Length: 141
Image (tube, rainbow, N blue to C red; front, top):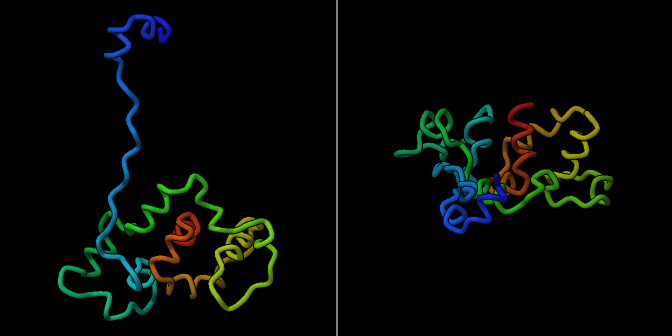
């Protein structure tokens, strides 16, 4: 059928074109130091998270919860789980700094990621956007 449509110019022009994937909506609540994890998942959200139209109910309990940076990162890369890691990074020694490669290694090897959680909930929005699937993994694990 596709060959028949392509061979008839009038039908080919009228054939529906595939839709480009649309960019999902993002939340206006998150930017800079204000992130979903810091303000909604941490046991003690900073008081600065909430003011005027930015309420816990509006920002944490309604869709969308993804920030502009996270949505942009998802659309910019085809492999959201690389998180900037090279094969050599997966086996380097851990440090006190946040390291998506260490989290990725732990997840790949089915190690307990709970030890990373206290630092995860304090990450800023740009660090979360650096590894969208890593952030999602923490949120659903």
